[in-house]
Image (cartoon, rainbow, N blue to C red):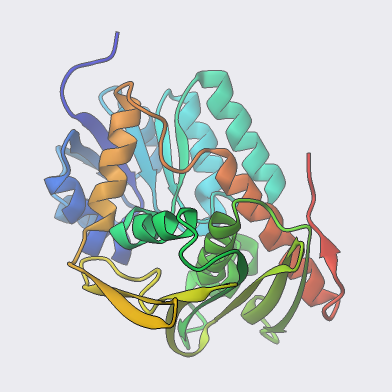
Length: 331
């Protein structure tokens, strides 16, 4: 029988996103409650004011009152912590990327199926009302048949001690921000590309991609162009070009609690739809909590993380081969 009351969440890893966005959203989310938080720095965990705070991740995972966990550690721990959480009977909402490579994603999905638990990759931008509007416009044929999606996400990251410069922990710009670009291309086309080709700049000593620029071939003359990096100013944009017009989002991904604008150019006219600030983390939490309580599955199916990982792996393989077209693994 499904337990009554709000879903008891545990937060594993307390970094900037958790402290500034996820934890505050959890305090206002319907059907969810912060039961516990774990950080290797106990003070960080306590600052979230959970019912229980831990300085060891496993202590939270074995907590019998925690029903679902949000994994927000560095990328290199997503796989092992996700497996351990499900072994302990917890549903898993995991920050992107779901894992460092496709085989690890496959193991996580297998564990979720084995234990009959929900597993989702936390692409919070998908919950913004502007994305719902984009999908409605595409379905209505407002811009005709989509031919190209241009997605860019970058910012300047100069601190080489940052975990995102650690290759062993799935560092690099494509895992950190390029994954959003890949995800939105796949969402718009509703499929996985056949092949990709990419060029990248790799750090001389850390060996992670500092920037990556790739083309995703979805077949029938449809392409996704992704551009990401740690080496320039903020870009956070998606433009969708169809046979009869375009849709443009200037705040496509980093848009939590900010006003956004969708620009529509179609039928010889330009118009825009303005959106009030939305707490995309709260919407994400509520969606996951409803699933845990027996409602519809999460917006992002567990296979989504695997599909994204396969494209990312192919992009990196192509970039290391100086742009050689690389097919997407299937299976």
